[in-house]
Length: 494
Ligand SMILES: Cc1ncc(COP(=O)(O)O)c(C=O)c1O
Image (tube, rainbow, N blue to C red):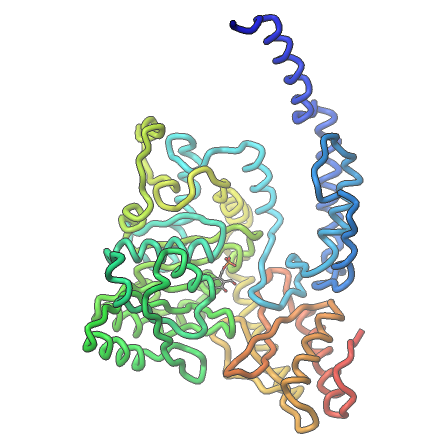
């Protein structure tokens, strides 16, 4: 028997009333929002004095239930206190200009305002039919990036969550475009260097290419792929009846910021019919600078590439771009037509992100990129990138004068350096130096292994990094190097 209609209506009203808590009315909403805005403003007002790394507080997460949702709602002040203490305290502070480790991220405030509006209006940016404006905006961001690369008009791509997802999308596209079948895998060969980002190894595995043969192409003394060695390897593989399939080059390696000889590599790939992918996640937006364009000559010859606005355009985490020289390859690999999507095929005047990527419903990322670029103009972004290139040169000169061994002039804004003194084991002393800098926390650096040797890294990419932060690091390194020379070891300097 059907339920009584009055009962149904009473239930609808009861649950509706309870659910309305999710939509606080005008004045209450404004008061809550003011608290959130106050938190953000206090964070930004103090950003210059906040540490880049906080070692305290990692273990303070006692089980008070604050991370877990409960049936009853809580007090916003208390929740924000929790955020300040437990989240925005311990660990790395990527918003700090003192973040000189890994590949620093950004966080320009205008991107956050874009995100806020994207979250509030919640435009559906996956499909043109649903939000032609949001899709047009995202496509414009992609087209602008493709033009920087020098790609033709039929190039295309989409905004993804970061470099790893963009590399994954590119590798899946390469597999589809090259028509690789399961039976081809054991004979298919992928070429990269030991400095390829590990997201590419993940991408190969996830796309079923883990069974391919992976060749590590030797690098020169600047950690750039050697085109002559690549040519020889491909030639030998062809003679052995293998199928050279994919070449992966770096335009800004994570370890040392090296840019491979992109033009020469493009010629080798073209001659042998190999798909050419360039990982420019870190280096890509340096194309806004004259220097960047000069070191990345030939990048437009790549079949696919990745560049990360959440690195080189200083956006908050969550924005990468995959670009294909010919958008049709991306569509062939990712397009899909479901019955329940049939209405969306009407009035589709531009490609939809959903036909170009693994995602369907997705964050409207275009707004966080468009708003800062339009509000501030491109000029300050270019200037920030120029500044980082000069800061890397400045740091290399000064750190060498202190007594650290450095590599040659960096291609971009990463410098590797290492103390080599007769007084101490370099493996130990450099590790101690890194620990001391991180413990002090005013600036943050990270380390890597180069030719098996423990090496320190300096990476300038935050828009908040200026000479001031670099001088803090230099001052610390000078004290630590002096302590190492006198045999007193590397102690925290602050
Ligand atoms: C060269 C390079 N490629 C890919 C990635 C992965 O990017 P994401 O961390 O955005 O996934 C990184 C990250 O630092 C990188 O430096």
